[in-house]
Amino acid sequence: MGSSPAAAAGTALEDLPEDALLCILALLAPPDAAAAACACRRLAAAASSPALPLALALRLGLPASPARPVLPAPPSPAAARRLLRSLHRLRRLLGLWRRLPSSGSASPQPHPPAPSLAAFEWAPARAALAASLLAPSARGGVARSPFVTLSIADSGDTVAALGDVPVCVNFVGNNHIVVEPAAAGEDDEIEVVSGSPPEEMYAHFANRRSPGSGRRRRGKHGRRGGLMEAEHFVRIADAEPTRARPLQGLWKGICEDRTLEFYLIAYDDIGGVTCRRFSDPRGQNSGYSPVFWTTDTTFLEPPFSEQELDNYSSRYHIQGVTSNHADAENRVISRILCINSSHDVVDPQLSTPLDDARSVEGRIWLYEDGTFGFGFVGTNSVIDLRHVSSAGCVLDT
Image 1 (cartoon, rainbow, N blue to C red):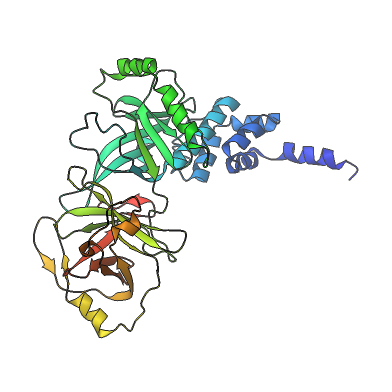
Image 2: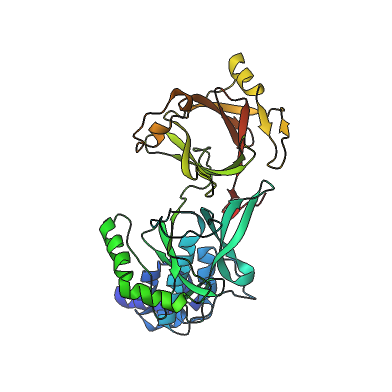
């Protein structure tokens, strides 16, 4: 009762059990946790505790069990700081990413061209974060090919590899990463905050690719199986629909030419919706091409007019990529949205006016199960779209 408030506060921290201190460290951001570990001996000891990796894993969503922790125990506050940083980076990588086109179009391209999408997911069995490249499969599902694997070394540092070749996975801001060959002893972490001037990023990459450094990098890795050049990816921020935005996200659907395509639908800041398709990179019309748009997301609610019902019921649904089988059976529609296929509105960079055949009205039919289909005037089909991922996990079918 007679102790001062300052003494009481100090005594309270010193009297806390280790599991309480672990909770404090696990709830802090990595820089704050590292600073707290240097503030007093109790926090420094907690940062060196073998139980800290488990507390961090639970906080960051990494599957772990007390019987078999998947993370190394930090032997010192410095290692704890590296572990915090590594876990924070792995958490930021989770999700779907879109590959940016290579700026060096004149350079030889890989054969076949690499897919445009990458998914980073936890791999508990390997105690790692595994990335896969996603592409449409011949069976109508999602085909995966191994990409980068990231794990945490005993030192607490992040280790990334493409097969058996070490690589670096670097952040440029919050939603842009670069995957490139790793140079021995090089720390490639780039922390350019969102909104930084673009010239900072460009200057950084230009300096790292000076003629001398480029030759050294190729000399080190050129005999390791032809490692790729630096590849850039941007995050697909809203990869799944929500109640307020039922159309947003990454979708897959079978087109009229019996090919499976990926579609990315995004809501803009003024309430509009745009859809773009990831076309086959081997085709003449490859790229990230616009499909439809609308500036008004007000749905038509039931009961629908006879004209709207006839517009839908007269169309067929393509059922597979390996046959011409189509299904005329229609699904239960909950709402209808009007769309347009005018590409010049979606892509203002187009300088040549488009003909009327490419600026036509269409419909989106939202089904009761949360999926939807779309079609345009002048066609007799519905392109039904399904989810690519659910709760952050890629669906293979």
